[in-house]
Length: 165
Image 1 (cartoon, rainbow, N blue to C red):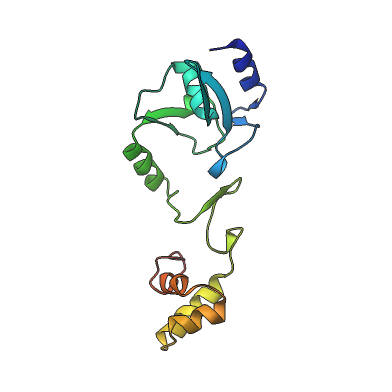
Image 2 (image 1 turned 30 degrees about the vertical axis):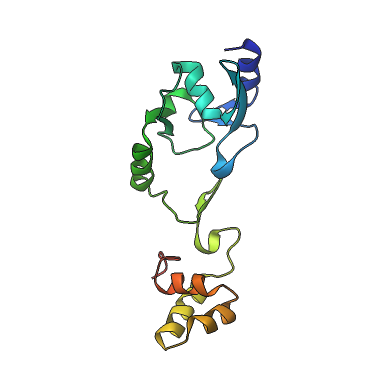
């Protein structure tokens, strides 16, 4: 690896006692974004993958770099491990990060009314389900709560906002 690229990488890392935080730009769900050259090709990748390759060598084809610490911005090598996509999915479910439609923030995954784009809250969800149980059609729920008919259906069938009892 190019020494200038390595130096540029380390300038964007804040080493702590736990995680080593990526301070550069971030991608979807909080993963660090980093650009480097690999075998003559430009890689627009994730910082934790670069860290893995810097410390352990190339990532075998078909494998993912996962986080023990569950912090997508962490690039500390001993917080990283290799796994398949199936391993990554199992890890996600085991750690309860499988929030459909969730968005990652510094506070973790946002869902429900904590989500930055939420139009509804727990009280409205409960009322909507009561309205539906009383016979209200999905179209009227959609109008009343300013959502689409399909979202009203998903809420009432607990495919969305399933955490609200």
